[in-house]
Structure formats: structure tokens, C-alpha cells
Length: 84
Image (cartoon, rainbow, N blue to C red):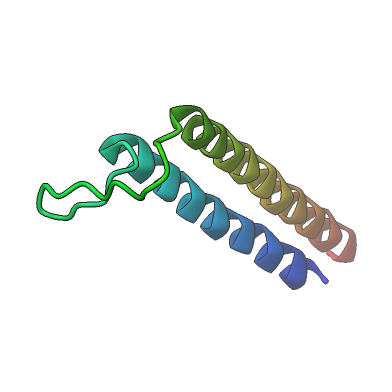
């Protein structure tokens, strides 16, 4: 049971890292892919607000996942104390 909770927390940390990296890349390049200077006129306009919101959501997901891991660790410690 504790292992699955820890795995869920770890998966959340990994997902949040990917989301944060994606949002940071979008912000860094302004939504323009590195195409050797060529601009794709058919590409949708860059929306910095959406990237910032995605970055904040990634931060919140990271914090929630870290809390899940911390709570599982505390619970496991308590169970070990009771058993000992």
C-alpha cells in the first residue's frame, strides 16, 4: 500500500518536471520552434499567459506530489514505530 502511494508521488513529481520543462521552453523560445530562423506563418500566436499558467500548475503538482511522498514516509515511519 505504501509502495503504491510512493509510486504515485514519484509519478507526479516526474509529470510535474516534464510540464515545467515544457512551459519553460515555450517561454524561452516564445513559442517559436528552432527552425534555423524560419518562421511558420501558420503557427498559432504565442500566448505567454498560457505558458505561465502551465508553469504554475506544474509547480503546484510538484508540491502536491512532494506532500504525498512526505505523508507516505511519515505513515511508514509511524507503522515501523508501532511494530517495533
